[in-house]
Image (cartoon, rainbow, N blue to C red; front, top):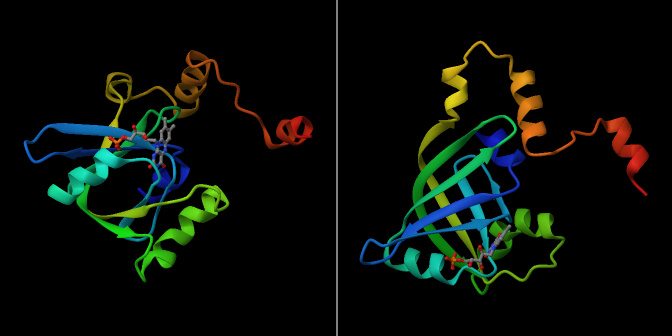
Length: 156
Ligand SMILES: Cc1cc2nc3c(=O)[nH]c(=O)nc-3n(C[C@H](O)[C@H](O)[C@H](O)COP(=O)(O)O)c2cc1C
């Protein structure tokens, strides 16, 4: 689970308002520790408003190339920038942005349940080797996976 969170570039955060109306929005500045997911509130007014009414959230990450991901249910709280805890919870997020994105708060999700998400292809074609699945998905998305050697050659 931690590996999938660490390797994902984007998570989706779902909340609900006081009438139960759902809201979902993407976040790319996030990190995890043993039991929590930390998410930067840079520009997430609705998510934050909903959490103030209803702290139950869902966070989802997917590795499209591996065709799997995780769905995490938990209780969210907000650590605002003027709080004494802020520097501690914001440090891993500032490391991602080089401190260039001002955070109004950190959304701290205490994970209570985790559910694996798999693409139907994994049970429809269980014998297909994972490297072949990866190759086919890369091709479907028009993405070329670079070897370390090739990356070195391409970097300025
Ligand atoms: C690729 C992508 C990554 C984003 N990452 C973040 C983020 O890490 N933190 C944040 O507050 N907003 C982020 N946003 C912006 C919010 O998703 C956007 O402002 C959204 O409208 C907020 O909706 P909400 O108020 O319903 O949460 C991102 C948007 C995109 C498209």
